[in-house]
Length: 133
Ligand SMILES: CC(C)(COP(=O)(O)OP(=O)(O)OC[C@H]1O[C@@H](n2cnc3c(N)ncnc32)[C@H](O)[C@@H]1OP(=O)(O)O)[C@@H](O)C(=O)NCCC(=O)NCCS
Image (cartoon, protein in one colour):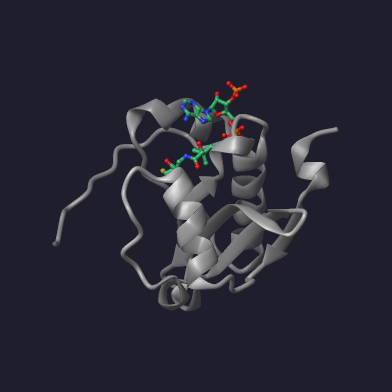
């Protein structure tokens, strides 16, 4: 059975900072410095994936309040990687962003994830990033 069929997905759930930081520490190469609750409240949407109650996946979408939305922080615990969960989270986030009024979903990423985002349905574009701090 596919992993996503065993997972429980929740829309706009607010996991604790401790739970999110634990997932982040397992997944990202740098520690979490953000207050997750502030960014969750500011987002257009966020989706969690749990397996047996354990938080194993996460994604959020920011918005300009109009047609543009921006996919942020798709995260899958490495013990559950490469089983389709990241793609499933992104597809659910895209569908919900559309329901909530967005017409374009933007993302930026490092080159090794080009294939991941292509499988999620993103077309390549030119994009830029300006470091502010
Ligand atoms: C990126 C991430 C969310 C992918 O989650 P996932 O559940 O492993 O993704 P999927 O199983 O849906 O992957 C689908 C396809 O995307 C590609 N892919 C996924 N992760 C990849 C990786 N780390 N490197 C290269 N290709 C990758 C593969 O083609 C994969 O298909 P395959 O396993 O049949 O080869 C997960 O690796 C992660 O949390 N990474 C750390 C955080 C991060 O960098 N997030 C993205 C920020 S832009």
